[in-house]
Length: 124
Image (cartoon, rainbow, N blue to C red; front, side, top):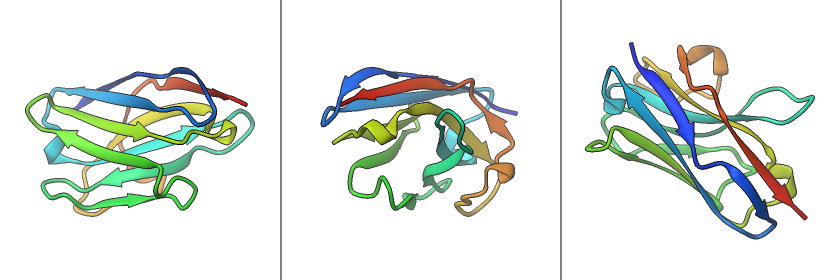
C-alpha cells in the first residue's frame, strides 16, 4: 500500500507556472502507474496526466497537452506535474493517484490510492 501527499498548489496569474509534487511513502512510485487528476467546483474529477510504471511513457488530456508535463524522481519517490501557460480554466483541486496496473488508465475508478489534493487557482 502507498500513501500520497500533494503539494505545490497556490494562486497564480494566467500565463504563469506551478510545479506540483506528489510524495509517496510505503512503496516506491515506480511500482505503480501514477496519475494526476483535477476537480473543479461542480464538475467531475477528470484525468490530467499519467505515467506508466517502470518506463517513461506518458499520456495527457487534450486540454493540457503541450502545457503540462508529468515526471518521476525515483530517488525522491516523488511524481511531479509541471504546469506552464496556466489558464483560468485550469483552476481546480489537483489530486495525485496510483494504480496497480501495467498501463495508463484515464478512469479514476482504476486508481486505488489517492492523495488529499492541492488547490490551484489561476486568476485572469
